[in-house]
Amino acid sequence: MEETLFVFILAALIFAGAVILKSWLRCAPKKDFFGIVIKVFDGDTVLVQSGFAQAKVRLAGEDAPEHDQRSGLESQRFLMNLILGKRVFVKVIDTDGYGRTVGLVYFGKDYRRDASFEVISAGWAWAYWQYLHKLPYGYKKRYAAAYYSAKNAKIGLWRDSEALEPWNYRRQNKSLLKRFFSWLVRVLFLSLIHIS
Image (cartoon, rainbow, N blue to C red; front, top):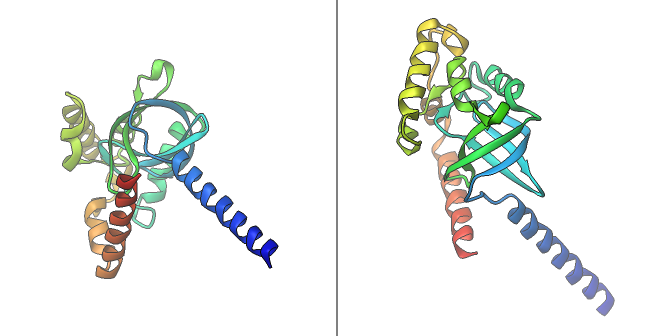
């Protein structure tokens, strides 16, 4: 009986340690970092491997269509072709309500190409007007120009005359119950972060 209890406690401690280690390795970095993009979730969110740690990064300044929204998969494919498997530099701007790092993702020679700008310029994302004020000086103007240029040229998602902003799409497609549980998870998650 004692041996079974010991094995159970040991297994519980190992599991708890693994959970803590995983959350530590996936915590949102507070400072800029280099890494390799190992996964593209959609047109505005990627997973970056930096040493032993991984960070889920929300590209700053843009909002791409959701997966189940029209043009969502095309937007994801564009970003995959752009940066998947490539070395990037992430300039950390903030942490969002989901615990993701919000950052400007640079790639290419000398890390001069801005992934958000490229996605907006190609017409696969909106400039995320609500958050452009958080970006360094000049980005709001640059992203706005790219947005209007792509929209006027009717490229990317702008070929669809009924393109719906992702923030409006999310609002329309979330039931009250889903919103409540999403809020609850965020509150619990953020409270855990602040406790540790």
